[in-house]
Length: 267
Image (cartoon, helix red, strand yellow):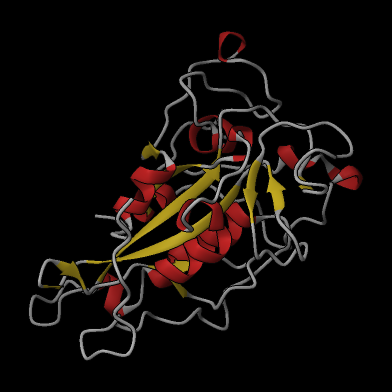
């Protein structure tokens, strides 16, 4: 894999992206909602939302779901003893490093980040000078981070020569244009339990409902439309597709090498 060299410190280095607005709410364990609110806030920033041809937008925002084909019963686990020991039930097993949840690698059933992709992909001598930026509010990486820094610290096995982990921990990525996510996402938070039995305290605001959702009977599409990575969809409870109404999915699913290429990190 030919990793494109960094241009940090040059005159053609990465353009600085917008910071996270101070008013943008954050709730631990509700990454899909944190990123929804962030996408909505950044979508109003002139560098992202400008309709003026004299000052065009610099960025295209995307919401990225990180998961894999497996089913899930547990929210998170820490990898120990070279991936051989784990407590409880395993399921979706996407391994991420440099997360706030633990010093070592963490296995999430799914995770959600926001990516800003430059509209102008400046090049020099065939090498990409523009940089994508990643916003991960649960990471110990800089916020935001260049895609190179984020991927190198979060998925070191994919970015370092000779790095490898068991296949069951390797991530897939559902890349969704932010506007599509803001229009269509629905969650009643049932994946986190209910009422006093919530696995983590829910956000103080009402459950989110996409701007263009017209089906009043749709309570949630988090798992079936966004988290599910395989050909088979699943319901909020993890029911197989045969047992539920076929779900509309959004964006496209990329493997690790495809995602690195989408971020312009490999040639």
